[in-house]
Length: 530
Ligand code: NOJ
Image (cartoon, rainbow, N blue to C red; front, side, top):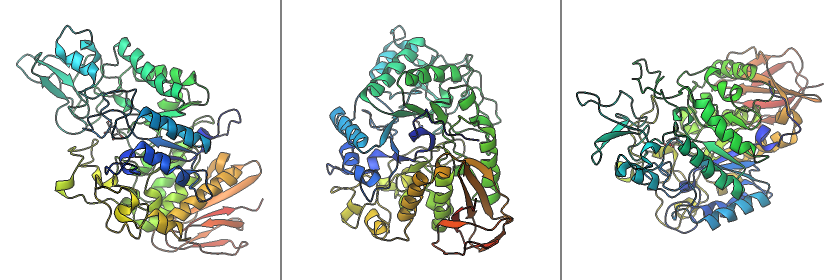
């Protein structure tokens, strides 16, 4: 259940957010890597002009100074901009340009680990008595010389690295170049709150907080059990306490918002997400909900999970559904181009604050990057996901100009083979394109009160391949039917259908029939007769 709260800013109750991976969005200076000036140059694509997508906000993945071992998720200074991306002045210009257009700006906050080149870590590793020694997690080898415990890095191999200088191991949940900060140390937490305030003072509207599960660990550093639950290395007893300290910072700035990133181990159930509402302040924070990335593309699976999620969340809780990001194979590659249209309608008709990953609105697909051009070298990225994430991070395809108009230099990752057909310029001129469908769906979401703040109620579609639900506000009732499969589907309705607002296949239909025939993969939005 979700009820619009008139006293809260609309952008984080029902706004559409757009994730920008800055390396790959638009390169303004020709070095082959996207930058902040590039984002500023493309703001009209997002909002403020007649042909904009009209999203309500953006989240920009990290642009901090960084050795880029994890492409910016290894932060060497939390309060500056890497020269590759520009300067603080470029950021201010981007923020001002966004705000002028009514576009909110969220940034990435990476509290669990810094870069191994961060001055804090360089001090910490210098010697055992350094005042910053306890800012990171140092342990001796066990008697007999084995690793301090059995914790594994999320990117492959043990999570401990021996530092020759002091003969102790440090913990790195991700790459060895990303040592975990010691959140049990109050000084570390106070400093991280200051880093957060730096950006809130600068005027950012919100933060996406990276890798939250690891902020608290088992205080005794016991081994993880061998059942793949990782119950000691992550989700420790202080997790919500630490997160609440960040929430308190955000709360001091009215109208700001915090999204937490955490992939649950237990899949397909709302259960692991609920404490992020119940134990934090759901007025100003909510978790990303990643299940729609992992569920099999089956109407029954989606209907079941989303019904459960909507039933389990309360009036004030903001659902944040996600279909893709820079860590997961592209949506169109996972489910295919025809289904990507159905998925777009699903995402943009559900309650809450949907996030679109840049390029998914074009139907961009995963690119097979040849070994000699590989950038991301992680062995795995999660409990079960193999290999490099380059394929989903390739440059945005803007036009038929060289390098798809992304750069005048050599793009840092190769482009998709068919970028000449799949790009913003081509799709903007084709009313049947995926981009135009996204634009129509976002427009409808802004225009129709029930899509903005209506209740979610499941409908029995009468067909196993068709997911159906209602969005109902006090004066409006919309029905959404989504055929997940490449076969036509007929649904018997108890009441005649009303006015068709949008079909993903552009199929016209009569308004007073009781048998609804859906085309393969068709999704429709109908305004029910009152
Ligand atoms: C999640 C980020 O999205 C991913 O790209 C990064 O590698 C890890 N957290 C570690 O910061």
